[in-house]
Length: 447
Ligand code: S3P
Image: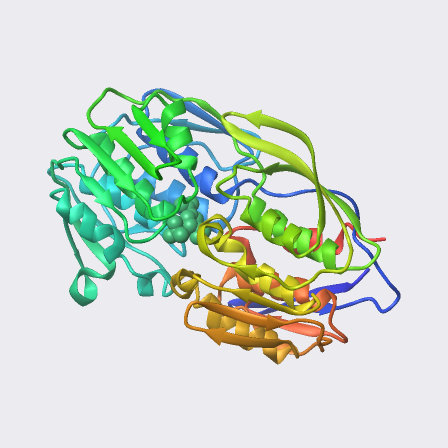
């Protein structure tokens, strides 16, 4: 078993990982926390529905906590957050109250962008929204521009592009939007605005992004017409209230991805990951790893409250480089950092293209993964829209930094497991954004 130690320094934590030299492997069965995207949506739709929504398996990460706090500040009654059963007493469609203070989305782009669609469509109410330093540097014009076309009034820093934002709610008009980017946050923002707008709102994407909003809105009773082949979805506005539901949140495939790669690259591993959401708009990581030669089996496939779920069994084996590009990118957008780690342990070169969106995530994930993996001795070249990684160079433990990005912290931890000597990951507390029990699981699942 590797030695895993967490050290606290004022506001930050450092994770020190010293790998085993005697062939420790990942074995047994693990559980992963609830899906972040579905957790946000369950809290939001519960808050704006009529009646009670019960959420089982909610992710207790910092991001869904930000969503819960924002909607509680606007009048929804949300029981203390736990994984068993969170009760949301909805306030009803169009009934969000003007909050007394500033809404704080923390580190969460999903909270801010999805919520903005709802706020813009609440006439006669003023909302002020902000986030942490990372979120305040992320582009908001991608949602402000289309909301403005619908009649929204939103002001932000630097020419209405950056938070903090002020929103003066308006009666919006439905429209058709050809989104220049495949972004579930943009699509979902406009669908939520469209719920309250006059007429129909249609979003057409260049490639299909995750469709959790479409599925959950339909379950709550919204009038949604989705045509995934055409990458088009329409919501009919002002078509009646949403009804509270029971939502069972599956495990997050983006969190499972760390263990898929850890087991694939650690010789002798045979690991089962229970209860993983395998919605086809999220399974690009499985396809990419299979293309690299990984041995991943789906077991016990089922549907849980409208979302496909399976257990995943992964066994170690040699990986080979591959090209990851085009329409699969939005379906693995959050897994590029951990796929870069897999590539560093694969034979040959892996090319990741069409992934410029990674530059505007919680950090510039292309720049940060290139710099931190190269510190560890990997051979990574950064391109404007991707990475080129030549695998097979042994990694050597050293000091690296999460850049306060949860997925970077965890990806570097998995790389460290197979490096020579100890790796020190600074600002590792970022993992709690999406995976508060990551370090615990890192210390389990070994023989
Ligand atoms: C998310 C959509 C993705 C993803 C993010 C969660 C969502 O962002 O990166 O972690 O829940 O809708 P984009 O839609 O902006 O690509």
